[in-house]
Image (cartoon, rainbow, N blue to C red):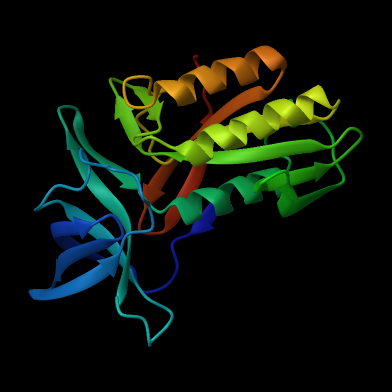
Length: 235
């Protein structure tokens, strides 16, 4: 099983407010604390005052925020859905899945190299094969009626990455955009055209050029993030 640990010391707390993209004020055992939010997305449907959240102590004692906010218990009509909001864990899970050869659509490769520079960016992974396979990971937390939507805020960076993957395919290499949906109540994932139509256009152009569009869904708990299986990508 592909899984990433949440780390040591994870506790439950209550969200009080999110003053800015990277900061949350929380209540832990009746004491107000500040936590780092490792996700720049809007997450307005998740970051609601009063929601139960999962937090882990910061490893750097000199940091201004003493906690990292890792997950939210999202309340839906169907029940409570645990959601991992930490994009770093999504990237780590993608790396583990690649290293364990858990995504057969990518074919055979000899090694996984992270953070390889190409063009104006460092793409997430290069799989050593002939030809090489470049993989860019996009973590998704927004789900609407069982369908994941990415992004939940306009992303110039995300559009640039898709353009670079498209250019790589044009040079005879292989490329894939891998969506990691960090919750389990999802059947498919695709572009959020209502929020960022330019990303949707870039995604459809990338697919037409031969970029592979892949996605997986995950389960979240205080133990960590677990790969559940592949889901389709719609464009």
